Each structure stands twice: as C-alpha cells, then as structure tokens.
Amino acid sequence: MNKQMIKIGISCDNTNAKQIIQTFSEVRIFELCVPIIYDYSTVLSYYRKIRRLPIRTTNIHNANKSIKNSLNIIDISNKALPMTVGKTNIKSNTAIGESFYRGLSDLKVGEIDVFVTSSTSTDSIQQIESELLDEKKSLPILTNDYFRIAEISNSTPINIDILTEKIKNLHSTLLHDFMVTFPRIAIVSENSPAEIITDATQIAFREGIFCFSTFNPESFFNSDIYKKFDAALIINCMSTNFIFQSIQPVSEQTNAILISNMPYVVAIANSTSLTPSIYLAIDVYRNRKNKSDGDTTNSLKKVRIPSTKKKFEYKKKSSFPLLRQS
Image 1 (cartoon, rainbow, N blue to C red):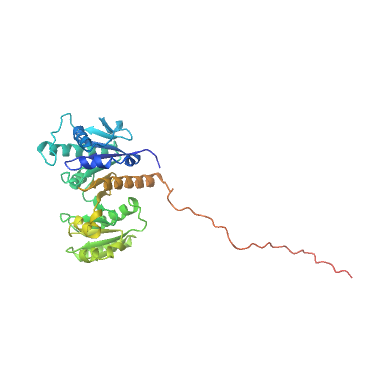
Image 2: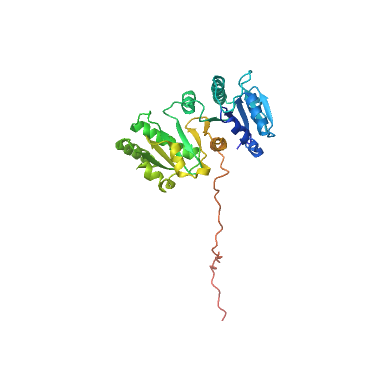
C-alpha cells in the first residue's frame, strides 16, 4: 500500500470547533492523517488560545498546499466571524453551509481523500446523498465498537427490489469497508409487510448473502441476539441513536455514521466526539485502498509443513541371486 498520508477534510459548525482543537491536541493523530479544516481561521485560533494548546496551525488556500504535522485551515471567507460562544446567528449558519459544500467539492475533485462532517450540519445525510450519489443507492450505517446498524427511513418506499438492493449494499459494505469475511445480516422490522421482507431475504440468500428475518426490535436488542450478527438492517423502527444507547455503556456512547456504497469516503460525527468518525474514515479508506491495490499483506499465507513421517529408503533387489558356495 502507498505510504502517502491520508488527507482528511473536516467541516465546522457551532459545536465541533472545540472538538477539533481537543482531537488534534493529541500529537499521535498527525501520524495517521493530514487534517484540513474548512472554517474561519479566527474561530479555531480563538478556541486554541482559550485552551492554551500548543497546536501548530497553517493557513492555506487549497488542499494541495497542506503540510504534515500541522492543522491546515482553509479560510472559507476573508471576513471575520463575530464570536458568540454557545449561541447561533445568521452569519454562523451561513458559515456552516460554506464549510460543508467546500469540503464536498474538494472531495469530488480528489483534493482530499476522505471527508468528515458533523451530524448537526443542516441535514447532512440528505445533502451528501443529493451531492454525491443517488439516494436509492446510498445507505447510512451507524457504527460503534459494538455493532453496525443501517436504517431505511420511513420516507423510502419499500418493495422487493429496493429492499434487496439495500441488503446487497449492506453486505458489500461489510465485506469491503469493514473487512468482515462472512457477514451475517439481520432484518429488524415492526410494521413492514412480511411478504416483501421474506421474498427479498430469500433472493439475497440464494445469491450467497447470509440474511435472516424478521426480528422484533425490542426482543432483538434487549437480549443477546444481536451479538450473533455483524449488522442489522432496520425498517420503519425506532431511532438508531436510541437503540445504540440501549446496547452500549453510557460512558462509551460514541458512534459515527458512514455513508456507504459510494466511491467517496464520508463519515458523520455525533455531537459528543469527533475522533470515532476520523478513525472510521481512515480505516475505510485504507481497506478500499488495499483492495484496489491488491495488497494481501494481511492475508494468511500458505505454509508447507514438513511431514513428520519417517522416510524409509527402498533398496532395490539385485536381479542376480547370490550363488551358494558349495
């Protein structure tokens, strides 16, 4: 695999400026990526001075000029943004949109490798789907250290073709992005038509996808059943954030969203931590890069084990019998 550092673009909003400063105060994260922040340079400088953190920052005009071991900042405007800590205003909302679309634009043209945004950035998922890929093909996956959940929203019409396509997308993401060898998928639903789910599951199963249906959300997540699967596809159920709160400790409620089945790596951070989404984006990018480069350094090599059986030499008998001496 190419040892070139991964360029990771990060958009800003009213909540994650402090998270960015806190995340990149750890020097070790600069060994994994080159961060490029789309924001007003005055905002990050303000929080950096408040926290008194020795973070190196560099103002650049485009992502090609980014440097290693520094927090690269692309100033989205020449005008200063008035600082109102803990409050929103019209100018700050405008800055959120400018930061978001500038990052997506650089991602599409290849200026950055991955893009991380915040879940509070004005309906991020819908904007990403409309900008980068068709909504029918994309699939947001909420993930953490315990489980992965893909959700089909109530606004999406459910039929056999759409559901089968979503199952295939989730299976492909588990294989190539998360490197799961034999993915096991559970269909969790409460009010969806049983016939459609059964038919779609059977079609997927005939194509070699281990997909099982249908599980009730309460019995599935309130017991240890979910631990037997690698991911769940939820249809018309409760909020995925509420589900994750029930299956992980309160002290470890950090997660991130991956927008899967697209040629771009996009992760959405939650409101509490930026770090999980950064690591998720880096891991997915590396997995895809290894697959495209044909890198098999992590695969098991065939080892020829020497036989422990004792070898016996075969002595060929003489064709001339010994003559007896009289």
